[in-house]
Amino acid sequence: MASTDKNISLEKLLRRYDRLKGRLAKVGLLLQGTITERTIIAEDPYAPGEKKSYGPYYQWTWKQKGRTKTVNLTASQARAYRKAIENQRMVERTLREMREISLRICEATTESVSKRKSKKTKDLGLS
Image (tube, rainbow, N blue to C red; front, side, top):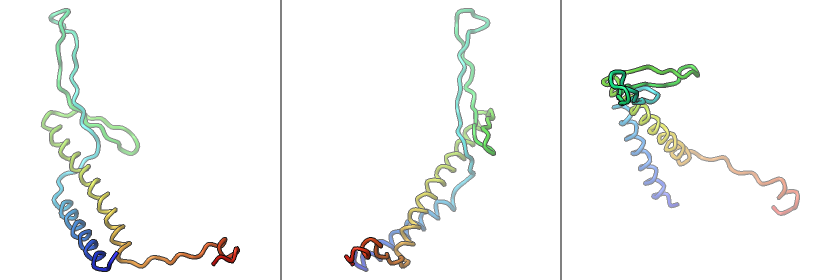
């Protein structure tokens, strides 16, 4: 790769990295876990033979110190918690991409260790 192509590629990586940093600066609340919406269908106690639906009920489930925790939420809480969970997932995706770009930038801007010749090649006199 020509030096100018390398510089252009490096500039693109740096610009992308800066955009990702900006995205993180604007993030809102963060939560891990999932929101589950549940509806229960059961026999109506006042009308035998007919079904009645109860709900929806919302549950937030997450891991805390290696244990699964579950909390019931109201509909408005579920909306807020769902947004915070979406933010968390976006942050994780962004950080993953930032790590990949960081590696490429470091590889492009630092000198690598020169490779040594194989011992087998030396022993066979093929060097």
